[in-house]
Length: 187
Ligand SMILES: Nc1ncnc2c1ncn2[C@@H]1O[C@H](COP(=O)(O)OP(=O)(O)OP(=O)(O)O)[C@@H](O)[C@H]1O
Ligand SMILES: O=C(O)c1ccc[n+]([C@@H]2O[C@H](COP(=O)([O-])O)[C@@H](O)[C@H]2O)c1
Image (cartoon, rainbow, N blue to C red; front, side, top):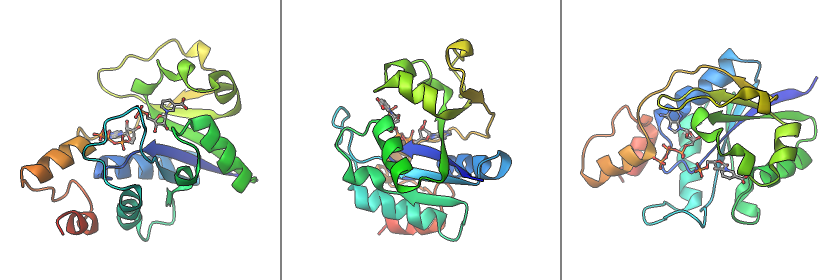
């Protein structure tokens, strides 16, 4: 039987416990065997003033998940054309891991825009998507998304932006990121 692998895409600038709690939740409380944190390189359409180099963001994810056999840091997008379209990443992952069955993980805030993603009809036809409800977003009519399943997950109201702001203001990031990540960020 193929292994079902959840994909959590993000800039992880930097990774924080919100990401980790979410990843661990899907890896241990759904039918997924593993969750891979796919580090997205720079999105050319987004501001980058305080974006750490991709290799550094990947290393922080590796530090954060060290010793957890169900989580993995994935750098496949570093070698793909930019911007990173999810369908292209999925194709590349399937080519590299033909026996795995990939599932997209995303917050409900992403759903309304999904039909405008690259090759959306093929993406929506080919892959299961687990959507976790996010406060402040309403779920659209799911009949247009037959492969979408809504799965509640524990959410923390923190973001990488909050971590970056805290660092800039020399405020504590203790417990907001794993200790090893904190040590690296404070170097
Ligand atoms: N606290 C959180 N709870 C649930 N999902 C989250 C949380 N923080 C981020 N995510 C989701 O995790 C994925 C990767 O997040 P991303 O790297 O963009 O982090 P972020 O913390 O939202 O970053 P930033 O503040 O820089 O925009 C995205 O789909 C994002 O919506
Ligand atoms: O494939 C696409 O066309 C596409 C368009 C927008 C977003 N995405 C995916 O959604 C993730 C979050 O996007 P964003 O723009 O909300 O940061 C991003 O890392 C991509 O994996 C993908």
